[in-house]
Picture 1 (cartoon, chains in turn orange, green):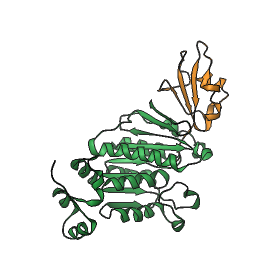
Picture 2 (cartoon, chains in turn red, blue):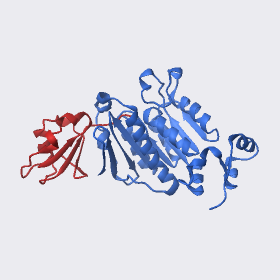
Picture 3 (cartoon, helix red, strand yellow):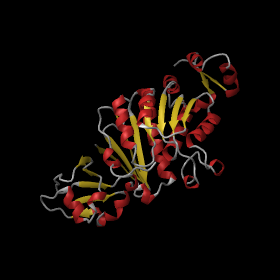
Picture 4 (tube, helix red, strand yellow):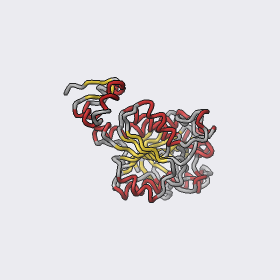
Amino acid sequence: MLEVKCFATLHEYTPDQGKLEFTPGMTVQEVIKRLNIPLEEVKVVFVNGGHASLDTPLQDGDRIGIFPAVGGG
Amino acid sequence: MSKVNFLAWENLASLLEKSSFSSLLKQNLLPLGLKKNFKALSIEEQKKLLQSKVLVVGCGGLGGYVLELLARSGVGKLVFADGDTFEETNLNRQLFSTLKNLGQNKALEAKKRLQTIFPFLQLTPLDYFLTEQDLETQISQVDLVIDCLGGIGFKPVLIQKCQQKNIPIVTGAIAGFEGFLSTVLPESKAPLAFYQGSQEEGAENTLGSPASMVSLIATLQSAEAISFLRKQKFHLVNKVFYVSLTDFIFETYSL
């Protein structure tokens, strides 16, 4: 299982219980696709607390945070 | 610890007619209004704050609280810029906005407020939006910059200018009940990915800007700034401290 949390305007895309089934060879981009998040709205992704890119390969148990642009002051 | 004398403003004001503020500091004479900063701050640290100069870019949501906190902490020299005027939709979160000053410039109003707290502070309001050229001159003259701009449009320019000019910047942003901050040094990573896209793309346009979130991120930005000014220590270089008040998540990510 992957632990996935979507933030700010992407909050609604967080999967049920924050869990998503892991399949070997999965990347960040596939998680975004699986959750039906519009790709252009994703600006930042962290995996296990570190900065990641769309093609970052994932391992079972990884924690993923997905963020849109945030700039309010 | 050397002995400090705290002077009530009346007495300090009359001494300031004859002596400079820095000469009073040398004699360990400090404003009574700062007394409760001790012993959270040492005398030496308080003196460092009083002699520090900070540029705050934006005097609205984040900027209002940041300025208030830096001023009350006794950061002696504050330069702050905003070309915008207060409007009624600012009242939910912008500390210096009131029904009485709608239509007035935010930086000039900030000065009015801060003067009534500590008249000994050196306050330099800039009542216009800083251009890249303005940044060239303003950034070089300060110890630290705090990014309190609203909207992703100009934030990357400000951060990159600070990196070029070798001045640290504490950047922060919010959207709804979420927000983050990060410290950027000349050679460090910057959270520019959060500021990608057009001004309209920022999540704050959809989720709004509630006061609890704005003031929280402003508080953390101020704390990071004060940590640097008093002991040259930052906590959030190459990191993003992200807060969600929806789920009470406080998380530090590596850039």
